[in-house]
Image (cartoon, rainbow, N blue to C red):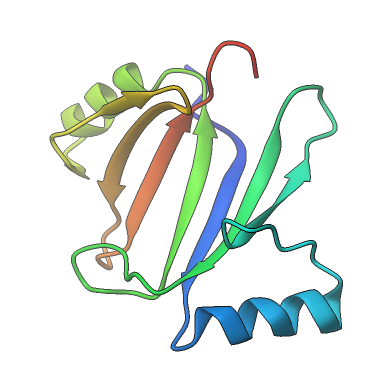
Length: 120
């Protein structure tokens, strides 16, 4: 079974998200949108990698970042990871943005698994 197929997003915390977004926009040319992030289109049609600066922390150890990995089948992968003894969070969320599941790596970093909607 293919597991990770790409990076869906990179999310990180900032003391002053508005100022940090402005710095990235001004100095690195990232097109920061009103919702606080940017979307970088994939080479295959219909999708993008999200980049976002916010005030929240992620995971049980309150790290200031989270990487979202694109996968083909969240529910199957979550089951496989549980069977392999990984620390998988019990909930799987489904919305118009796709299906999301989470696993915590051995150092306590929360990792988001994302199955894009069918149209992506």
